[in-house]
Image (cartoon, rainbow, N blue to C red; front, side, top):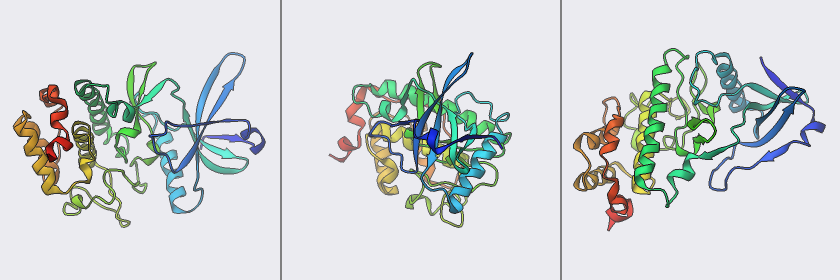
Length: 291
């Protein structure tokens, strides 16, 4: 077990790291630790969990340790993986990971009104490529899937010029318990498809290829519509898809979006995203559809 141990006295000197106000973070506090010796200097991010007892905490520790043990199999540079457990005096209170200092959160890009829809679709294609890498890796890496796929859990690393996945302690790996997901948990539209979107005994969805692609499709449609499409009922979802078809979306793309509420496995052809009539802009939004 790899650990970073810090005394409470020293911890008081460490700077707190604050996310942008639009990015929610309720389960932890973040801190930046600067480490240097004669030859090296680095900053690492400490994720100090607010809840440090019970089943939730035990599952977090299991997940982080499993990620650390599987680092060699998780050979995707875009994953910001935990590196060590964080011990404050003699008590485990979280974990540490690399600090990607020069970054911008994906949610800020996708919600930027000054960024064109064309540019946002180009960005989403890169996220899709990353998710495809993870799906391809899942058999090799102890059935590894991201547990909470949404725009707030990706960042653009300005130095490496790549999009990266963060918040990996909510992933599905090995025999850990599934974590709550922004787009899946409490989503009544999914309850009629237990084989495709399985639930554990606590009614939390177990991440798999289908949940990954579903969440990605929600990200695409949320961006196009400027609305939480994952929150609308199935009937209105299909009505909105018909609206998109009437406004130039290819039938093949509509079929892939429509498939999420059937028993067939989800799939996504990233090449079809290039066919989206991005020049129509506001015409495709949910607000315009409702008029």
